Length: 181
Image (cartoon, rainbow, N blue to C red; front, side, top):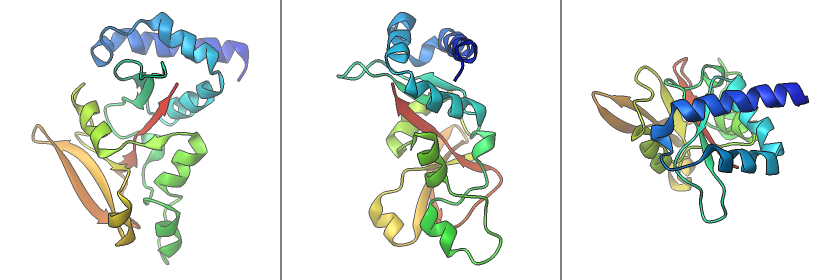
């Protein structure tokens, strides 16, 4: 990442941070900026989240190591990460009408993890997300072993967790990522 692009992107993150203070009350931007400067490799991951429509922002305060969790805070599931089945196994199992890829593969390529169900519910405490879309979430191995995968959305003022065959994909289903910096 070139210096000018890096600084412009950091400015974007700072504006979003300032606008979304309700997501990280009590967190000081200078502390987050210090972490970003100390871990410049994470900017590439955050930029990948941004370029695919995720609008990453800090949610909550630093963990015990001083790291901050950035999560996709776009109102709807990131547009550049939709129409994906759950994982490589599901993609390989499809014989016809294969999607372009899988959520797990794309997340790994970006350097993010899919939100867990708990992280998704915590995100929903900071606003209303996925009112028209849905997002794959990390699926427990016992569910995945049986061929299923989990996804979440918000409807009727409630957060719902559903299941689907891992090989399914829909234009309105993507995934939200998380990365510690």
